[in-house]
Image (cartoon, rainbow, N blue to C red):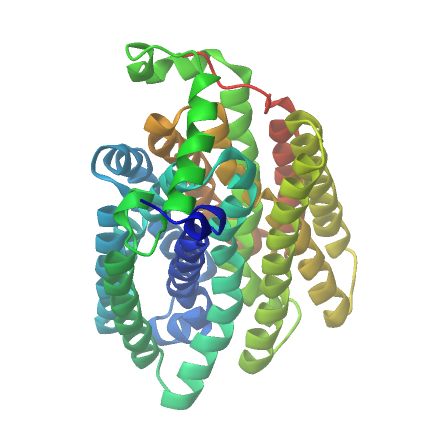
Length: 430
């Protein structure tokens, strides 16, 4: 029999889980951004031009995107714990193996392996959002999942630049980060559980709170067991397509900056390697602060009585408009300080879009949240495949970043349109 104290004072294991996911995703982005930071040195060593750099930077997303939908299905079927733990260990191994590359072909193969291994993490984390959090807390959960992206990119620039400086070798930097990733994967598998009651640190009050909130949510969802297998039914709904297009626009901007911001700062703004590391930290650190602010703002507004559509359309609308304006004005400033400030503004407002990771659980039931998150992230990572190549070709053909910044501006408009057409007030009846 649970004590009255246990029933009134909930543990906070669910937030410890999501802080761990924040760390895992941050490590994810340290590893994937490492190539962008090291690319000036690698391109000189291997003789890689801008277009070829774009292809190598893009190659990560070829396998990463292909893993999204299968990974969501596996997370729904086998639980997120196994998927997250194994994926993290495997991508750490590929990160370390990249240090053995002797040319562009081997480097490309290592990036393909890294993308394959990192692919499952976001869909499985979206599944955790559905099974560990009640609806009222999923905005914060979503931005903790996605907040690792700017956080890892921010620290990735400093970490990789510092390791290269200390060891005098990008290869040693990759080995060190790879081994650290493997250790994090082992810890994640030890701590994460697929159900609150399976985690020994969760007390009865917290487990009962989550189960009660889920029961209320399930009661409001009139979907038959047969209907829950009809995934193609999503294609009929505007909200589904808005989710895909909005997330694509978001990722065209973000992945474009992850891949090309270091080179942009080096070539267009003439910053040194150490200055690039510091600037990257400031820019993507602003993104992390913006991400957390956006998630807490959305949950607080909803708790204060704001309707889901008013809250989400306003927050994501402001995010996309200010992102678009920041990238547009970036093309017209000459000062490196102003450029870093505008890039920081871009990331601060763009990362409010981390709220998208609450949308799969908003639009469907917990049984399909993993696969719907995988479909969403597959669409978003089409941008990851395309944007490094597009920007590389633009820069090589034009010799400047002006049209590249206009491309980011157009992508921000796509993010705006997609975010505004989603109906956040009801689940899709499929």
